[in-house]
Image (cartoon, rainbow, N blue to C red; front, side, top):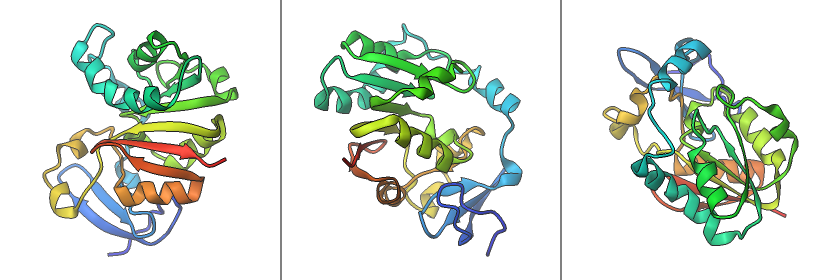
Length: 215
């Protein structure tokens, strides 16, 4: 079934129905393989903030720090201090930025709701981290264009997000049930991002992808 929405990542009109539950309709792009929530079901900013405020991630939460370490490790294995980094979409507590600062890196952080200092978006970085954030992007083409422009040649971008695997698994996939999760990426989607935005792509684990910007 064809849909009127266009893909928010590649702008293709080759969009098909993917899944529908009691709350939302999900669409699939044939060109870049992105699965995304139909426009009519996207949450507004106040709904998103209300959901985010329920999260209890803190600097003292050792379990959360261990979780974030999966995105931290690919950076620390390939770069050395005092490389400069941006934690994009850090939420109310920039824990990953704190972890990397403790490793000796020069960190900045940004979040459109909790740390909206746009001056950090005028700098260039050796690396960018985007952990559990990209799935919230309503227009991932815009954020990826921005992040690519902020990254130095040869720079690294570590993205943490669970990857969609198949329509069959999607039906019972808990990750889609968070109403702020609206964009779902597969391995094929990251291959598209690599080609389109100029990155080499390494799938580090089931939920971490490392992008290296071409010189």
